[in-house]
Amino acid sequence: MNGHWFSFSSRPPKGTSEIVAEYRAQFPSAYESVGKARRAVVAFPRQWFSGDDLSDIESAVGEALANCAEHGYVNGTNIDVRCRFDGREFTVEIKDAGKGFDRWNASDYVKPLSTAPRGFGTFIMRQLMDEMEYTDHGTQVRLVKRCSAAEAAVAETDERFA
Image 1: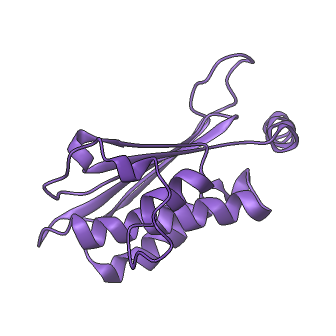
Image 2: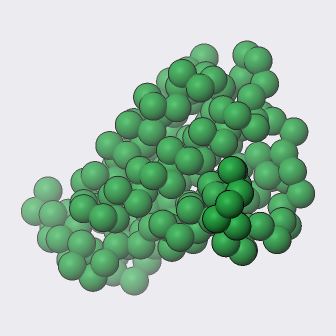
């Protein structure tokens, strides 16, 4: 069953990293779901990010979701998405039901050859996000984007007046 789940809480005390807001959803494991899932995920951090940072999130999330649809497709399964914002950083975890892969892969850390027809996805996600990590034997990717000082101040101000 596909569904969406939202949760918002008051701003945590300064110096803590408790979750301010969370979004969870499931999308059918299929190419047709990638656009809808990307739009849903990107709508969540739009409250705290804008401009290039939001575009980076959108591109990295789109790539991760496309990888799920291509490499993690198992008929009748879902792509699970969990997003969190703690006032300082946005984290998205995207998980599929595929067979996974060995987490260590040298291409994860090296720029692909410019003549290569494929293989840029992991490199691009690493360049666009502050952190990128595969977990659960390659069936889950964790992406992190940190707020700039100005965006963090705006988020804090918005929370105080909410």
